[in-house]
Amino acid sequence: MTDTYQDIRYEVEGGVAHIELHRPDALNAWTPAMGRELLDAVRRVSDDAAVRAVLVTGAGRAFSAGADVKNPRETTPEGHPDLSTRLREIYNPIVLAIRAAPKPFVAAVQGACAGLGVSLALACDLILAADDAYLLLAFVRIAVMPDGGTTAFLTERVGLARATQLCMLGDRLPAAQALDWGLVNAVHPRAELPSAARALAERLAAGPTVALGNTKRALNAAAQARLADQLELEATLQQEHGPTHDYAEGRAAFVEKRPAAFRGR
Image (cartoon, rainbow, N blue to C red; front, top):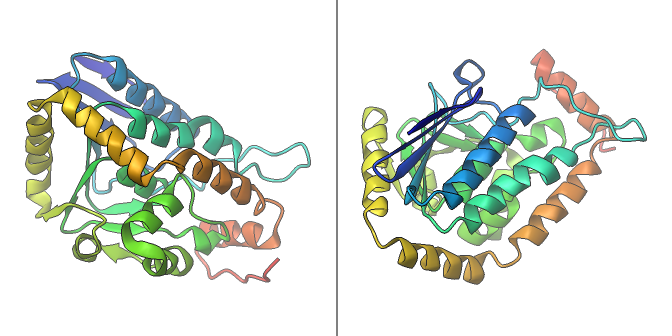
């Protein structure tokens, strides 16, 4: 079975639902429209008895470059950039839906995996990376903070020191180092990643679905019981950046490809 969306691709074959981010010319950067399609697809796999495992990939040379900074932002009633509504209405529900799904999710990451792309990958149960992949949390460069559950996932998996390093410095984390830190499960040569990820998803699809779903539920209870609270906290704190000089300067500097001059306000 196949289904056509505008910005993602969705296909079910052999018990595996394949969800592909499909804005390759924009490095699969997120827009609200793509987010809504992704949320719809994630909810569908939970309800579809024919789906026993889910494979999440990105088209082209990157998994996802994160949110599309060039996409215009809505404004609050006070006239400030709205940095929280999309999180609450679209992006956070995607993360929660993946974690609540009674089926295993596999992410196959190649090239850039940045911002919301990191959130999506870390929300999945197992992550395979290509040897050219890297994780990047560059929020600090535009004077905002990581969101989409990233602060919860990172602190849980790599500890406070490393999570702080990734979030505050905004440097790339290459696939090999991500494997060493426990953020991904395996690294494959780029050409072999699609087949390796498909084989893993098919292995899970052939497994005991109820037992895998209950395992996921128990792991969530052990490690992510407060994920919804953390997502809400991120959204609340993110909005505090909207009125600041530094956010306006960081966004302008990013678009103009120049160094930002932050003032700390």
